[in-house]
Length: 82
Image (cartoon, one colour):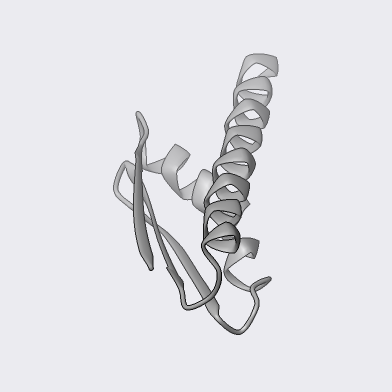
């Protein structure tokens, strides 16, 4: 199974910040799961490959999107306080 997720942001700086915030996901995976997140201009690109169970695959996507949401909210809070 494979999922490619593309998230668009207003600036390349925001995309890079979000990608860095969720990039630890790239290293905390079971052997049958691979995740790669990168920033490209104003986009965050994530590719998820799984040879395991569908539930694990779906949970991984859910975890990624949840982590991304938290990173976005944190970044918005920081920007408001500046």
